[in-house]
Image 1 (cartoon, rainbow, N blue to C red):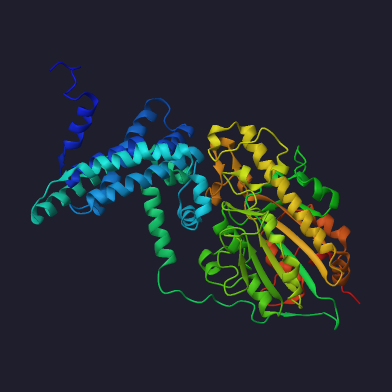
Image 2 (image 1 turned 180 degrees about the vertical axis):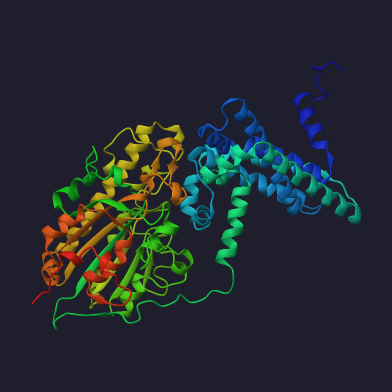
Length: 558
């Protein structure tokens, strides 16, 4: 048969021959092949990140690259040596290939760093959000680089070896790949150590080690023992200084999603993305820093008394929140959610979810527009006769499907990117869709303020703040969730707006000119907890007047 001669049956003969072939490999050989495949195919984002640092330039850079390639391959082989045996090798590798293909797609397409916080975000993503991410490009990539190799792995016959010999071979194998990793790192130790020291975030791009290590960390942190009740805070909370017969107060806290300060019209953005708010002239805070670059971090943090300044993830996770303190003080609370929940902030308190909402005009099978959060809101408030705080948790600008976050009436900036595969759109198209979504939030906030202004039976106020920002392709970054220490301003600088009715300002003795001047100074999520307590005159040892944005502009009311 010549080199170009086909077997009998043509192309189908090739397929039949392939299907009938069953290569015979040891577990160690299979682990080595898989590790090489991981390094060559699934680490494009990592190598691109390393190249961007300049570490691969010149002859020394080439040696550094070879050293890291060998070390990464050997370390993954070591990891697989721990995980695989004759019974688990094929099913576990098949799962790893598909999962790593998906992880590599997001790392390459959006520069997603799979640290513990990002893995936690992924685990808490709901079905609607997940569907948006399963774009044709991702499905094609996962099929070609993950599913087909997984099928090939399933065709492999694993060598059966008596266990004493298998154990001895495995020990030698583990020692060998460990030695390769050590020698490879020592060859370029100075360059590699400098790279990892100065760019620690790059380790979260090395697949599959990144998500396997992070997933293990999340499991250990979140399931270390039986669930414990949240530690109470603010049990001493009470409302002080209110005259008898005073009007009840209503504060609406709007927690935005993924809106960044740079594109906020009130902050001086070249486009007016907040025209209705501009006409209402609320208090705008142009320099606000978020607690985190992802909802899983920011939401619990901003509702805690500690914030980013005294950040302690475990303490925040296992403690009650601002809403519980308000409840202890006798103030009614309600959380209305168009997102993936309150992340424990409202645990045990009144909660409404519109994840599967059916409100005509606002909801479809794909989900609800944020307008649904206003539907029936005042009827709910009417059943809360005391002071009340209502949280409206938006879907906002959640990506990558920015085009799905607003009705067609807000398609003002065109052409807009109308796919979740942001790499298929120009940068301007991505920004156009993102800005249209902000126009919808502007309309939502204007409607909310309008309804509060009509409530003459209550003193009312509204505070809006986004949970984190978003990258729209700057420096190759998309979406959010970059580790906080290196997160760009686009992901941690967020808009914040306040509106107070004349009755609220008067009953609290707030000098609005003073507060407007204060709004031009720096603020952060750390101010939210204490400012809400100050505004509603809640006394508790948890309150820090130094973080209360209203304090310096408030005088006693006679």
